[in-house]
Length: 345
Image 1 (cartoon, rainbow, N blue to C red):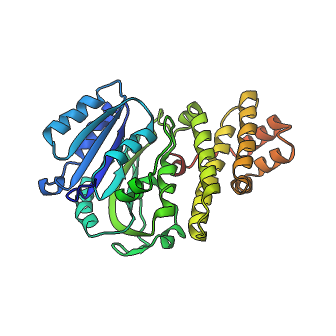
Image 2: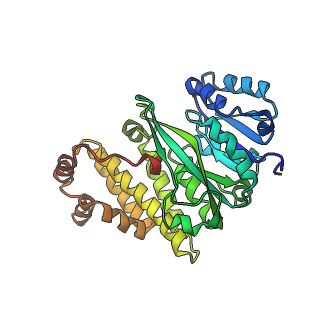
Image 3: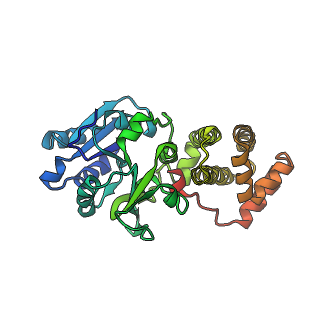
């Protein structure tokens, strides 16, 4: 049952993030009257460092706001699922354990959400380079702040990332929105799975989320993608099945969902291309993925080909001459095309 006093539940998936977690939690400490309306769930996903102990320190200091949920390791999606299940707020937001919020604008978000009653809310966010500390603001000022609109009016114009979104918790719980477990790269699931059930959305001109980039071992670095390549493949195919099974006669929602998944499938092609063209195991995996995508959702399969001339050629030749084709594409596209981190994180 939701707690009407809690306006916002912030779920923090946390796995071995002791180096960052104090900054994350400190950024959520606001005025006492606002803290009473805030619920922060630190979901310790089986960490082996001091993550849980740091969380318990904040739980002890702010017992009406912070709570640690300790669980066996189940991956990012599993931690989000736990937050949705345990949350009591009117709205729900995911904040990764190595990211943080702009405290000043976050304090403004709580009263703003009290006055909002739409299924989705979206706000501005920063991308922060972890090496240079340079900040890049991603804003949506083409929309009118505080004005509720049918969700199609926004989905028809932009593809929203997880970092911008705050979602009505009752919707997530009622519709049993569940992310893949034991997988990286489920952020797109978190954004897309609720869309069929969402009717309206409000933009708030606040700079909330601080998204940390350029960590070498980050799952959204190319090294991370290579390490967790099967996770990424599995999520793409799951999303392709989701789009196949979504039957609502709503062209804007349909197009938003298909476009987002096709972009993620395109980026899977870029991940395959990041390997040496002589890697026969990757060639085999690439071919199997492409065939499974074709069988699962032919429209997403076709759209993926529209993004890549190399992929269209490989398909025409049934992946024969893979090494010279991919080698040529790699030379032509140097430096290698970047994977879209907003799509795949």
